[in-house]
Image (cartoon, rainbow, N blue to C red):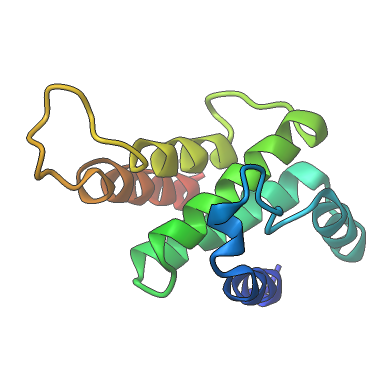
Length: 136
């Protein structure tokens, strides 16, 4: 899969602007239609699309091309879709990446208040997941 879906999602993210944050149930950045359409277009499964998009988000974030808030918002949307489209398990590449972004969302109890959870948890977890994914 090329980066075109990720690029399209970035454009949606920018277009939503503050609307994403000011609405209790903000509009999704990625939809079930996006995932199903991509699966049909590439002749793969919805699970493969979820994994590939998660991989693009992880790589883009680790390379400094994609912002944490964007990646986290998309992976949260994907998680909701994954519940319906693809069974989750701890070995699943998507789930590893979802979990890594999730760990960067909050201050971890007992840790220094000035600690950046994105750098302490998310980035190392993503780098580990990417390394494992490449070795698989």
